[in-house]
Length: 516
Image 1 (cartoon, rainbow, N blue to C red):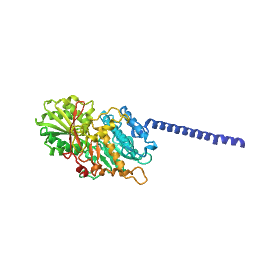
Image 2 (spheres, rainbow, N blue to C red):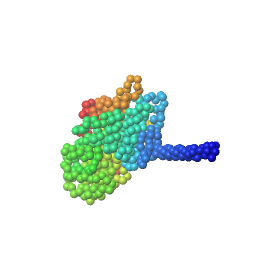
Image 3 (cartoon, one colour):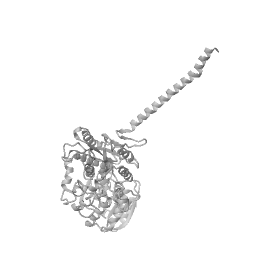
Image 4 (cartoon, one colour):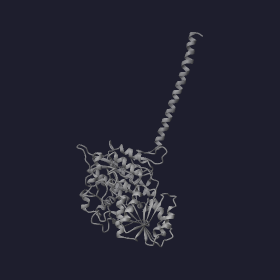
């Protein structure tokens, strides 16, 4: 082979063929990589539900913090979400002044209708409080931007929203408080712990479990630094119920029916009922545990046991969640001793049944009454209210906002389950903390930690005149001697019975000045 031929052969067989192969392989890699990137991009787009909210791989719930208008796929939220958007958009006007963000954290994606009723009503109350804060003739600085944080319904789904909230304390968000939280569960307890450890102030609206409160005897004094609550603890609700029972005795024997295993809410309620039995006219006939489960037959057995009790047994103390209470009431409606009257005394979760279509309304007509400690009720401060502890005028603040024709629409309003009222008060307390917190010289918004430091100073004339009653916080952030409406679950609604108090009498000015 000639030298020239040898060179041509080398180029063709040694260099060009492998080079073509390498180039082809490289092009294939680029195309595959591009395809994978494209698939990933598409998958991200599919999983993203709205700005700040996405559906994790393998998950069904849209989790996170909605930084724009998003109703989490619930049409019932659409009107109030639109009104929040309008209010938030107005804050971009330079004339509106500085603003901070408050996040309402609730399980917006819950599949349970009873849960969604409460979420909707608290959402309405939160918007009304935002509107009041930004338009009240008094101090309006800083303005309040409201965002919705979905904690989800799983054991760890709260982490997505909480981690986002932790990253929103600076920049344009300037998050300064989280309100709401929802039920007293282990997951929500972990969420509150995480938030407060990052110096984010939290205002619980409907959490009542003693384990989710600071200042509990025998425990770390303040495990949730920066937490305040507008609802009494289960122990305080049970004390109020005991004073009500003393004034309105119904027989002298009681049955304790409780969830086993329990959770923070049911466990503290059971413990509180044990204390109630020692300080009330009742003595315990027996205790009946049940397993919280839709398929449990425990209530069928308990139904027969209830009918076996002595004739002077008329009271059942129920330490369970609302879903279990609904099944229990339905079972008792079919008991064989309907001539034997019973009253069920239970905690505030019974308010979830106010609009529960699965509750057997006829059961409530079968010598069976359900009385519970509500977080609030619209009739509590209307006719002949106590002279202290709250007032008709204080409740009138909410009525004024409800009747304001300039605010945005919020959809159908229901007040008798107390959730709108308590949601309104929770955001108002957050606003109180934000506007009274320390603001560094030259700044227009308070430091993060200083908001939670305000809670022990919500006393005396600096109390919050809530629509649900006076909110005087002790040094641990818990409301002191808060008004507790005793409410009767009635056919088609909730009927106000009377106010009761953890201390046995209404909170007065001296008690509010130095709450225990």
